Length: 312
Ligand code: CP
Image (cartoon, rainbow, N blue to C red; front, side, top):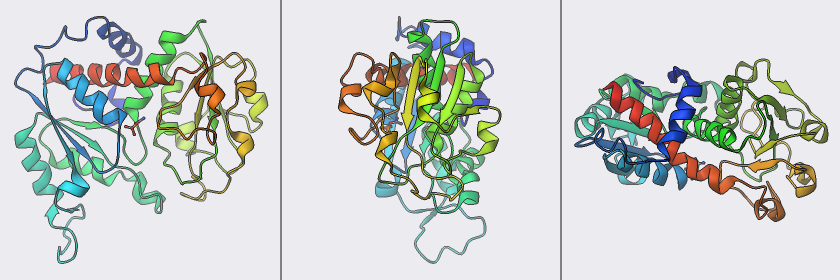
């Protein structure tokens, strides 16, 4: 693997999932791969899981880690070509990415969308600028439109917990007071299209995701109907894509409850707002696998970093 910007960078999803599960048995088997190598993790936004699990994954592979909260600790970066930098930005991405590339062997970036300009967010300017101007591989730790490390984690978790060959997986929109990005549902949808599951998306009308992402995936507007016979239920809020970045619905009836969950396992990428997105009784039940799911963030990051180290 040369880089990990999105799921398209995975040549063999099923094999990668199996390899990630296998790595859990002996996390230090490939400790030699990262010897004298460093990953630089640059955060434009907050993180708990991604920050800690990616460091742990890199350290399991023998790598050193450098972490920087780039917005608060670095110079304000300019991403526009040819701009006259006489206002707020102090350093151009051309120099910044080239300089960071001299200090590290892999650059990992987290940069959320602004959620005000659909076209601009879709261009993935920050992630793609790092890819363009860095001379080392770039890893996406959640960008404007994609969270592929989370989607790989989710596929690993479903594989580990599935009881039948082709489980039914439901992505169920949930209410939230703030406008959240589409990266997690986008990548989850793309991943479910790649593995052998019966996949259904349920959300209120007006909350359709980008049709270029959902493609032929089934959309069922009736949540109760969608949840029938589900094996895995993944609750997640996202803001409207059509009326871009707007919160148009906060209907508490879309919150996941134990009654709605039935016999299914409950998944969420975390962080999650209790009793808004999902009821306490679900998260505190045996049916919730969110903690095991979060643990798999290390496995997903480790298998990706391993592949990149092997390629370079
Ligand atoms: N799920 C996830 O990416 O968590 P963090 O935002 O805490 O990294």
